[in-house]
Length: 152
Image (cartoon, rainbow, N blue to C red; front, side, top):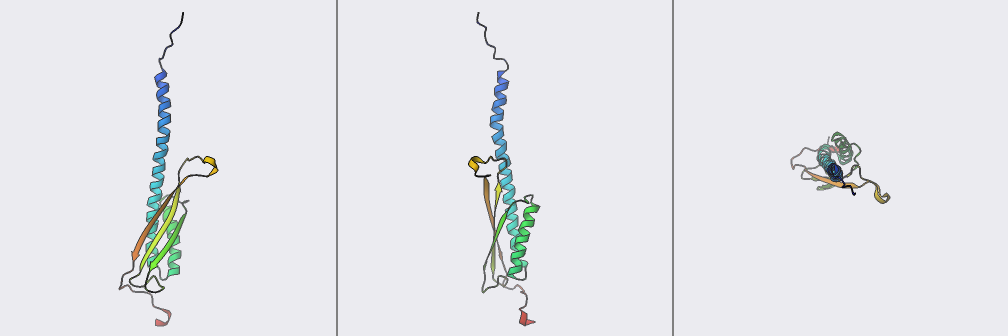
């Protein structure tokens, strides 16, 4: 006599495996998108704040130092303290000084976000998502600039 096999209860096992197979990658994708979005917001805010800090500085050297400092501070404030950033400041100005009237200061912040829980495949390290943001600050034509050394 052959005994007939009972399939009762196997749907629960199949549904559990299907949920694990589909939900784990979906949750990883959602977490990764949130991390990238947080990094993008932080990079954008850092570029905006760095442009303002550079424009309000009395000279170019002080502006560059303030821009670097404010980028680190904004990234830490946005919840991404380990996020590395490279700050590049360019200036379209009449002469060598970016802080005179009709100058246009452009700040570019380049950064990256490591994707969470990404396995290191073939020893290439963690996967990262590259981010960049730019902010342009025009200096008005009738802005008061700091007096030169001989003008006092």
